[in-house]
Every structure is written in C-alpha cells, then in structure tokens.
Amino acid sequence: MTVSIWQANDTQPRREVDVLVVGAGLVGCAAAYFLAQAGRHVVITDMRDVALGASSRNAGFMITGLDTYYHHAVARYGTATVREMWAISKASHAFWRRIAKEAGVPMQECGSLLLAESEEEKADLAEAARAANADGIDVIYHDHDPLNRGYYAAIEQPWDAAIQPYELTRAVLAASGAEFIPNNELYALRNDGAGGVLAFTRQFVFQARQVMLCTNAYSVSVDPYFIGKVIPTRAQCLVTEPLPPGQSPVLNTLGYSDYGYMYYRDTFDGRLLIGGGRKQNKPLEHDTLDDRTNAPVQAILDAYLREHFPDVTVPVARRWAGIMAFTPDGLPIVGSLPHLPAVHFCIACNGHGIALGAGTAERAVAHLLTGTDPGPVHVRRLG
Image 1: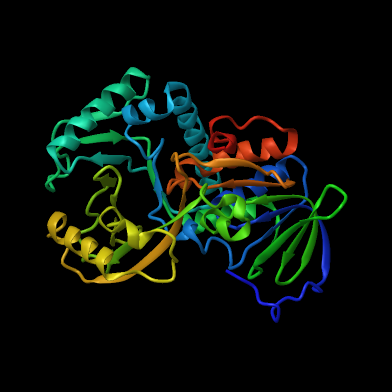
Image 2 (image 1 turned 60 degrees about the vertical axis):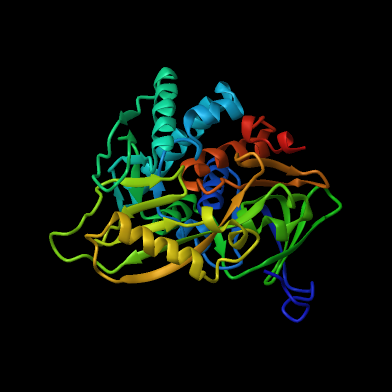
C-alpha cells in the first residue's frame, strides 16, 4: 500500500504511544498480548482491519514444526536449531489453544497427515520419520496410504489441530486488551530525536517509545532494509460448496503432500478446502498481490480435486489468495532496524504462521523489552 499526499500531508493529529504494533494479524496480536502482559501500553494499527491479510487467508493448519522434512531440516539448520524451532512451534500451539478455548474459537483436534505423492517422497518420509523418532518426537509412520486416495505413505502427527484462523486472530486481539486503529496505512518511520520513533500513518503521526513491525510480506514496502530478506509469495485456495449429509467430513484430518506444496482439510461447515499449486507456477506467485487468483494455479487445484477426491462432486464455491513472507533460509526473522533501533520487527514465518507465530512473537517481545537474544530467528544470520 502507498499513501498519497492528498490522503495524508504529515499534518494529521499527533498521538504519543508507548509501543505501536503495526500489523493486526496473528503475530501482531500475539506480540501485543505479550507486551501488555509485561505492563506496556500498546496500540495496534493496520492498513486494513484485523486479520485481513494472510492470517485469515490461510488454511487454518495448526501443524507442529518447520515446513521442511525433519532430516532435511537437520541437514540444513543443525539439530540444535531444529529442536529450538520445534519448541517455538509447541509454545505457539499452546498459546493458540488456550486463547481458542477461552474464546470458543472453532478448533478440531484431528491430527495431521504428511502424505507422499511418489515412491521417492515415500522414501523421504520414512527417513524423516526415523530422524524425528530418534530425536524423541513420536510421529507415526504409515508405509501405505491411510486415506486410500492414491498416496504412497504418510507421517501422522496426532497432536496437530484444525482451527478457524480469522476468529483466532480476533480472539488474540481481544485478549491483548490493546487499542486497535484499523484502515490506517503506515507510510514512513523516522527518528524523533529523543530515542523514539515518529510513525507516519494515514490517520495519525504516532510518537512512540518503540515500534514493533508485524507486517509480514508487506515489510518490503515499509523499509528497504527488508528487500532481499523478505520474499512476498502468494498462495491460493479453493473451497467447495457444503457436501450433502453423510458425505462430510471427507478427511477427518489435516492433509498435506508433495513436500507441503499441496494441502487440504474439511471446513467446520462441511466443505472441502484445497490449497497449493504454487510449485508449478513460482514465477507467477512471487512479488505479487493477494487481490486476485490466477487461472494456472486454480487449474491445478481443480485437477487435484478431481484426481484425489473424485467422490466430492459439489461445485467449487470460492477461490482466494493470500500473501506469505518467505526468507532466504526458511526461518522467521526478529530484530530491530539498524538505522532505527527503536523499531523492532517479527515477520516472515514462511507460510507457517500458525505453527511458529506466537512463539516467535514472544521472543521478539523479550528482545524488545530486555535485549534477550531470540536465538535462531534473529535476523543477524542473514547479514
């Protein structure tokens, strides 16, 4: 988003705030919650409204861990980092579950299945399961397709869950107690000359002691520091009309396959949701917007529906897109802007915001409050 001189000419009303959180998605609302618990007065603002970015456009998968097969993650990051990221993921899920139960957010403890779409992927699944088991993670390996839908094998994580992500975000915002200002684009950040920050937004100029950016894929528009560190990446979904009585649920679990590039679940109102198709269309899905879908990706989703779910004959009801934030190494980033040290950030969960968001936000808040090292999610690793 950009703001014209006609929309805001820098003379809008000034407001003094303690901590300004920019971005009212899952991560921003979780950060506001942890800041408020530490006694800070928090204002959240967003260019749209609560959870209208990726936080309500995702599939609602509460899956534990990274989006990389366990043995590949160990090879890439090392065992210590993988274990720490799993701990962040478990902390995230514990937080979401508590908020969801307190607020009555729709959630189903259905577990997840990571499914193989080829013999090669089956071999990878078996190795991933062995590596996880050796590290004390009790995933269950199936050397066949437990769904009987044309897959080759599966890893089951029975502790995973499906959730309604929009209602979850709203519940976290409410639990934070933070003041929320929607429809308020941020367009500039400057030093205030006294160790704080002037945050120029369409409605106000905030004079903040500190700022926490939870702007995810939009971060590259906030400050050039994020160019090359954050890669905006679009994901697309479809959902069917409600299935007739007796035909739903189709899965009774969260399913994902082709190394996570395809994913599918039952909705709480008896529909089938399928997402993915990006793997075959990566140039179309990078550095783009979430205000449109495109035909090549949606054609892949349609074909996948026919191939693996031929029993689902109801029409497709809706198609949509969302923008994720990826990093070059696949881990979130936490830190502060070198030229504006009072501006902190917690962004880029690499399409796994429900898996990692709350735990990463908690570390970002600790870093803001006390300088605590956030560990493997610190931005310093990217240079």
